[in-house]
Image 1 (cartoon, rainbow, N blue to C red):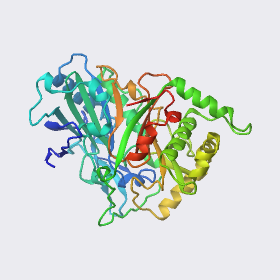
Image 2 (tube, one colour):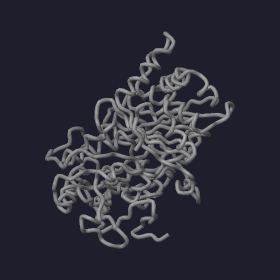
Image 3 (cartoon, one colour):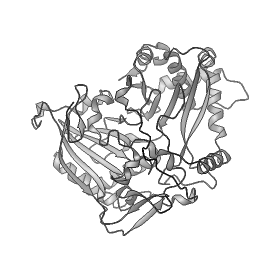
Image 4 (tube, rainbow, N blue to C red):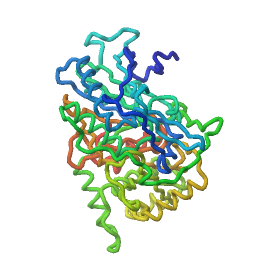
Length: 455
């Protein structure tokens, strides 16, 4: 299949045409800055760039004016978040670091239009609307996000952040690709909200990023890059499907009440996250049709900012997450009441305290290696992102997003992303990637869906 501007063209996805490529640097001179990557960052070098897609319905603003405003705001916000305008490097000992200098290219910005059969799509009738895209699967929209299939190790030669702004009939699609070795979800949305605030007229950001990673971990880890770095399998080679399941606040409360009514008195109440995680783990395990004796695992990427000692501020900029695992036989998950699985998840999260984090760090530092993004375990359900991230508050001055999604990178059979629902309250959107047959069963599982909506 042909490629144009580095984008893979398929009949299953919208096509785009890149009309302009530029780079954005911090507005003011900063000079040379270096920041050592620490133990919390290094496991993600073998992952893909972390992709986010925000779809906006315009307020009548001209596309070119909007792009100019976004780039001006980006230049301003990069004065504080200048690390995103740098590149990865290694010192003579093989220790990874972020290097920024004023003469570097900065953030890559791509401007694009929808391309229909080679036509430019300038006419409104040739373009798609924000509402149409908001209801599509991410595989259809993958060309709206840059750096598809690019490993974070490529940050040695590429910008650490790339942004694609695609013109829609009545709005704009903002695709972002962040180098995951540089930041986690908390830092991603801190940056996005700060950028939006600047675009809305703020002179300064409300919360400056805490940039000294060595306060969380000072150990210098010498990491050797193999001659042939591990290449994650392409999602395109796997028979995967991705769906968005929307759970209302009422539905979640119903599940949570039922779960807590069956728990033992000596167990603390199950949280909303533990409740929904249990609901997903049990349903996916059943949909996979596993034999009772087959293993199944559950993984959560836990924010460690308040778990490390001393604790780090919410504004800590970088990765301060670790994967927490639990698992058992599939038959025990599906055959027992839901509080059985919920207790396992609750216990795993509680046990990941400062001592457990320190132990994990020392184990990695004693034998550092590059993970692959799918090293979660057999028959795993892995939860990333968080409904705590206020993704629908990212308003650049033309309204809240119609939809916020994760891209196709870093997806494997059992990967789950959680986002707050657009409707607000305690509603939650659940993105799930599964093998095609299992997904078909999950979509028909009335006990899983309840009154939820599938997009």
